[in-house]
Image 1: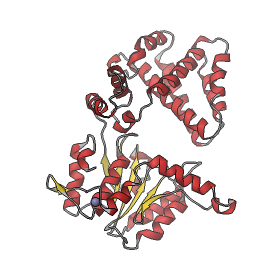
Image 2: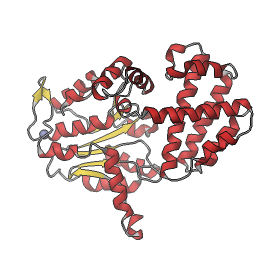
Image 3: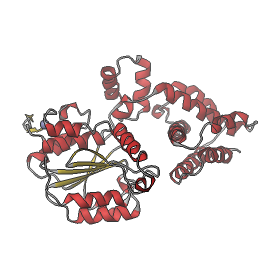
Length: 364
Ligand SMILES: [Zn+2]
């Protein structure tokens, strides 16, 4: 799977490969872009290109073979969520005393370490950065370049400060990737020591073309809707679970409807009741938050007279009807409440309760 398999952002890819060719690749790189824009995929591709044992030259720029022992071992980290789940499971099987001190890592190659946010808080912790410090100053064993990939920007304060020390004087044989949706979430001092590379969203017709190739079982209309809903992020589009999204969005419309109609709330509580604590509840709540944002944003577009920006195009008529009983202030207030809900999630507040509180706050 060479660089040409990376979908979109061709200029960015070319620039990165040119830096590799000139041996001018920076020691710390922030790969920024929306969820699903390919940050992780790209970081692994670069790790392979730096360490490939039979590097082909394609378009007279560095590439990777995907077949040598370095490429294949790095490639085993591609399914990030599966590898993380395995690491979490391994930790669960430890003795209670060891569990506490064990952090989650993904390592399929001795010189390439992937550092995901550590559950259950889903933060990058100081012990994880400590592992980086313990290894980064040793020359790589099987690779040419040691690679560290932080998959999120959610650093605990102490962890961020430790990382900063590493970035002040990284060894020449190591590269640190920081994958973030929003570079503003990183310490300014970390940002100033890294090169920022942004992956842009793809235009809808490109996503549609990609889906036609990779999800041929989808109907034309479904494909168009997913291309629209995924906001230009190819990874999101490919793994989009449309029926699941439509079900969650249905609940969002019920919650908004209940809040506006001022009727009895049995319907509402039936929904929030299903958002219980635990991993499943968390995932469900994240989904409903995403759907809420998406619907509220569309309502904002409609109320601002920009219907061409609406993403949930299949329910545009319904949204227009809903809009008749609310105004822009209410929509912005609701969006603020969703922010609040999301902050509550991060603090691990009881989810069904915060969802109830959210719905109650929206009532007029
Ligand atoms: Zn290779």
